[in-house]
Amino acid sequence: MQLSTIAAAGRKAVAAGLLALGLLVAPLAQAAEALRIGYSDWPGWVAWQVAIEKGWLKQAGIEATFEWFDYSASMDAFSAGKLDAVTCTNGDALVMGGNGAKNVMIMLTDYSDGNDMIVGKPGVKALSDLKGKKVGLEVGLVEHLLLIHGLTKLGLTEADVTLVNAKTNETPQVLASGDVSAVGAWQPIAGQAMKGAPGAKPLYTSADVPGLIYDVVAVSPSSLAARRADWIKFVAVWDKVVAYIEDPKTQGDAVAIMAGRVGIDAPTFSRFLKGTKLLTLAEGRKVMKEADGFGSLYGSSRYADAFNVKYEVYKTAQDVKSYIDPALTDGK
Image (tube, one colour):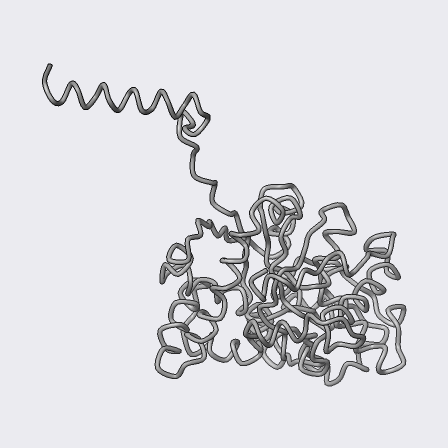
């Protein structure tokens, strides 16, 4: 008998022995499917494009597929079970959950620091000028929340304006039509709205109330339970992203990558980035501590929850604590 034949016979005997002992699985288990993550046009979420193009997720041992959507469409896809996770605001995470698509916020990417805004058409000079006027925005989502907060500070209510429901990505056309006095949108869509209606300007922005709008990665409970080790690795990549964007030596490359994803020039994207306060994991962990007020993800989310119930975005108040798992930012 030739040596090769003897070796083959030996391998078969060993395999048979291992199989009998339950130590060999045939066929070999397939690698886990890629995590499916929906993201959309917001600087704190487009930042993930840096990790994608640099290959940092694969370097961290993560197979992940990022899928690009308009914002509300990304939440629809998550709610339909087509995604493991989606990037969204904390208030909108509750909107999905309150309507049946439970999720867990595992990390903060940023908070809005001026990029969310109520934009008045030419001639509208202040938020108070909107009394008795029409405002176009996506009812029940984050700009609605921003508008109501601003009106409340002025002693006004939603009854003092007429809301016109419009998809956020359609608000530039809605403002340009002249049919409304203002729209609610975030950058870069807000910038497009102002460009399309020369003389339009911000009346109230998220910079007026830091912490009202936090931006997060929300994961389905089933994916988090089954793939927690992968999600921990995923979260750990974030600090590398933030460092690359904020380091003067690499910021130009980072901005070029992000601007390319959304199809605008780098100088314009740099302006949008200034209205977004990116958070390192350590900074995000401080926000993910239980407290009242907008300095805490819990406090901010409770405010959003009360808004959602009051305005019948969903019927039943949500258990905010069940939506937040801060441990992954500590690698747990």
